[in-house]
Length: 272
Image (cartoon, rainbow, N blue to C red; front, side, top):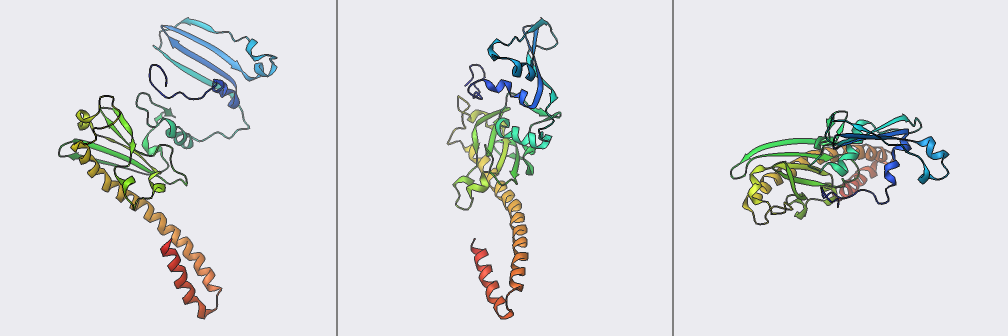
């Protein structure tokens, strides 16, 4: 974990800093701190020509600059035209998997902040005033991708800060909720009324909290209904596609065998 922000560190060996040179011929970094701006430029051609990369001269320019208190900007130019770059929607979905749960910085793609509605699928928002918790806002997306999400579940946000790990509000304990479907659920619920029921380390809500139970009773039926709406439609479409194939196969059979075959197929489809 990083020392100051306590974030899980990415990478292992440090070579990721050169990743920009796979997509571009030139990579420039500018960084601000303590009223100074420092900058340097890396060029792929220089690295290819160097006999020893550690001896490569990389001049760093520094000058007074109060235009921003801190931060860094990386600019890639002379892009590699032999690569297919992801479109903005695809890029948002990739970034959301790793950074969508962070609450102390924002990621913008083409000016749009990374958010729950960037999950490719069905998005919905629900706002309700609960008797004891107060106003809560539930925002969820159910992915229509073939694979599950990396960090599925619903986060609880209290006072603008995420509390604990994402959870499924009881659906993961129900026999009629397949894990494969739950892994496509992504969302969060804002409930500032839970502030007095958060543990000291903000790692979870108090386990026997009645307010947490009230939120759970509100969220669980909504999730069930959303799954039913989304996947009932998908199942109907799949059944229609199958039925067309079944009809084609039945038409190839002798007429006296079609009724028997049709019943047998329906029995199998109903079971699986």
